[in-house]
Image 1 (cartoon, rainbow, N blue to C red):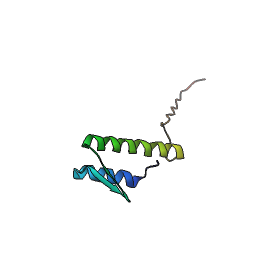
Image 2: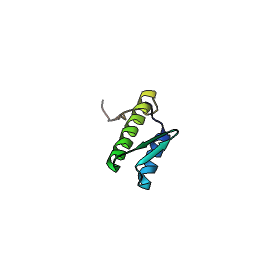
Image 3: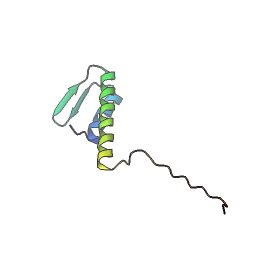
Image 4: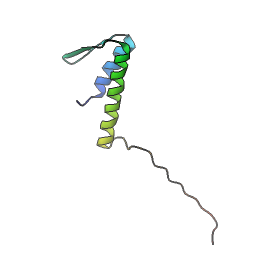
Length: 73
């Protein structure tokens, strides 16, 4: 399933309120504990990051270019 930023926002809003029930659209999910809700948030964040990398919105690992100069003859 492809998650969206709205899914993440709904999960984080529930966490902030201390709720374990999250409703998004016509679906409602009740988590057993706050730890399970935090695990769901981590999974959605990971999926959103992978989607961004796959689509090219996140460039992946940054590259470093070093330029050195000198007075060499």
